[in-house]
Amino acid sequence: MIHRRPTRKVTLGDATHGFVSIGGDAPVSVQTMTSGYTYEIDKCVAEIHKLAAAGADMVRVAVPEKKDTAALKEIIPRVQVPIVADVHFHFQRALEAIEAGVHKIRLNPGNISDRAQVRDVIQACKAKKIPIRIGVNEGSIIERKDKQKRLKELGGVFSDNKHGHFLAIMITKLEEYLDIFREEDFHDVVISAKSIDPLLVIDAYKAISERFDYPLHLGVTHAGPKETGTIRSVVPLGHLLASGIGDTIRISYANDSIYEVQDGLELMYILGLRERLGAELIACPTCGRIQVDLYTLTQDVRKKLAAEIKLPIKVAVMGCIVNGPGEAEGADVAIFAGDRRGIIYVQGEKVANVPEEEILDRLLKECREFEAKVRSGEARLGEKKVDILPPDPIGELGSGWEKIEREKRGTALPVVK
Ligand code: SF4
View (tube, rainbow, N blue to C red):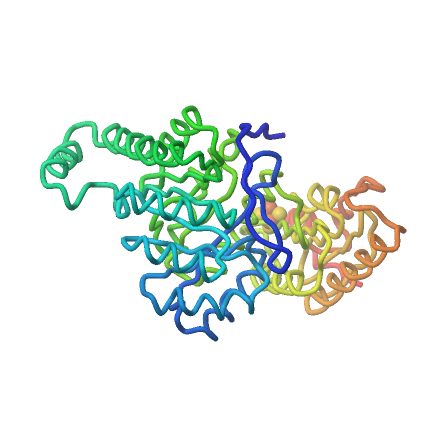
């Protein structure tokens, strides 16, 4: 059980797009960002639909040009999820996005620092009750315009304590920026402090969570391709979330944004921060004992479960009798394989012993039937009915112990029925 840090709560959205709260007692939300051009209206709408269908609680779009904020007027009425405008350099884009009906604004203190301009955005958001995320980012935190300031800040980057230097700049810039918001008595604020360095991300969020009571948006900036970005993102985000820090997250991959949503939700599920939607799949990594094509089977099961099962049924796909019975005991529906066969269990009860080519269909049939029983109240998720006994060593799977026995005896394989 994770005890989350108490924070203020902000809410965005409306009756058409749904309401999402961040912080306070709200569940940790998962957000992402479109990767296409916002001004390409149909494509942008299609991408937002796809990300919302995957489970994104809100979707952010880039608005670098006036044609992007103009497009928002057409995009927002066509989507069903709150939209966040990502604003850099031009405070006018924020004002235009607010006018277009956006539900939240992100400002970067690294490139919109003029106090009068920030005040204008705050007042426009206040009038429409729109929250603002103040997002500092390692990539844009160093001063670029003021030469003296830039030299001083860059000096620290080349010091022995680069880590502490960036941390100090992030906190200072946040404090300076938040002063403007306090002066305007505006507190619908979410904060982020992203870096590419996972350890700096951990330290930065720990530090700001001690200083400010605003909800926190967690993220690792430009984490890279999914293949390596997953570890870079999940290590610090998982660490922070498990420590109770973080109220909304965005995982950033150089890939289709749908993976950001899927991985963000999975992180929530495994930490018990959100109730799982759809089946949970457990599968063994396989080893030299394997006697079926478990890789293919696991991928096929994963895709079918994602498409067909809506309840959080626990499904285990195991390669042999070493760990199969244990996992099958804990799962609602399970298969453990033997020599080109698989035994299928539903809540600990053996329901079938089928050849390899029938495993997928039979397993899915049992999942569908079990889901229907849960819906009708005939069965309950996670209820264990019986202890599973591994098959007879000389037994029905023709594998594992049987193989050992056969080798010891030098006898032929028994006929599998
Ligand atoms: S369940 Fe069996 S096949 Fe799978 S990794 Fe464990 S020992 Fe190997």
